[in-house]
Length: 420
Image 1 (cartoon, one colour):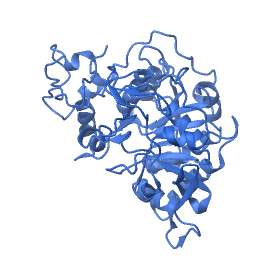
Image 2 (tube, rainbow, N blue to C red):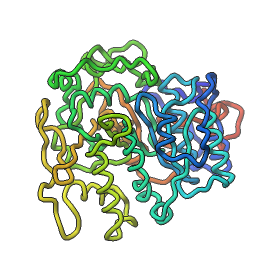
Image 3 (cartoon, rainbow, N blue to C red):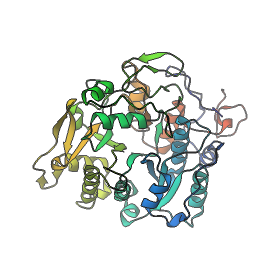
Image 4 (cartoon, rainbow, N blue to C red):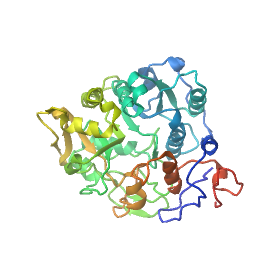
């Protein structure tokens, strides 16, 4: 059911009688996870005893994994994360290529068993990620569980569970890899403006690569919501999903080097695959090794993780600096990339107009004047960062998956208000 389908960025938000959500409402509004018309991939026979490598081998599609971390408090955001990904890939079929790591839970816990059961029924891989670091601070502790994923050599798209995918980014990420073969990872940012708005098609041409992937296959970038477009990143015209032209040059390249100095928002990270399946990419693994080292010292684990990681990757740590601090890396597109970790890692900053937060997506609408369609909406940069505020803002953007009655006339839902 398309119960919260958006109708356009200028549309008046659906009426809400209350932004705060009671515990009962949260439970009711997140049990709805859609219908499964195609039998999903069955869980591996190793069950809850699977290693990360076994899970990746079982669930990866085209050597790609899309992953997030969650805990018992954030499970309703993860339900929404899964539902959004399923919708960008057609809606009715099972999820493909998804892994969810659950922190600070045990397989025998009732909440985990119910959560894992409903996600596995949709073809999602679910496993526990427990460690002393996670126990002390889940936000920073999760990074100690990313390296096993990278060691498998997969293309890894990692996002926070409060991010909502609006389009399938995988064809775009493959085109980025073709345009910038030296780039180990790409990351979103906290920028409130774009840089030079270079089109990715020009970068692919400069690199002498093939045209962008068509999007056909397991991750096919089908149309979705008001921002749905054909995955035309190096050729063809994008549309607004209703036939309207969004421009004839396609999606944006990574930002120019100046954006590397800004705050890299680690809520969306895309790691390029290794040289072959089963072999991790050295730069990607080095980046995560430095993250783990930095969070293990100086009390950094108790801080918000983004600041310490930005500093470590770009400059060093307390009392010492990299011999080569943040610097531009040149490729066929010019000096656009970020040289990090003493020159051993190459990164890129994803375009702020397409990898959005609530400010750049709904308020500033950076995507509109550039005639591009956003890939993701991350529930950050709001007046409040509380859970209920995130849900309210995602509802206003009509990307929170509620049960059908939430916007109907049947009542319930803790004050959902009328409307279609």
